[in-house]
Image 1 (cartoon, helix red, strand yellow):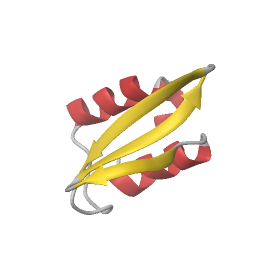
Image 2 (cartoon, rainbow, N blue to C red):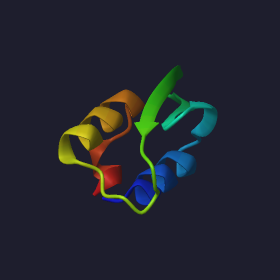
Image 3 (spheres, rainbow, N blue to C red):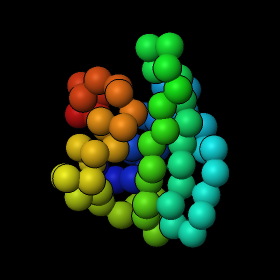
Image 4 (tube, rainbow, N blue to C red):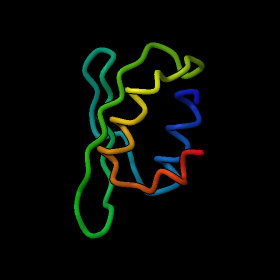
Length: 69
């Protein structure tokens, strides 16, 4: 999965860019009544996400894994 695809899913589910420091972007959203933060660290939106990093970001978002297939 590319970063642009992952970010599109976050935006579609109400996440917004909260802040940025260098390459680290923190997205904020409300999932199941709780505020969730997802840390996304990358240089380009066209880069592929490594599987372990993708799993971590999905866990941080608390969204269903089915959305990311």
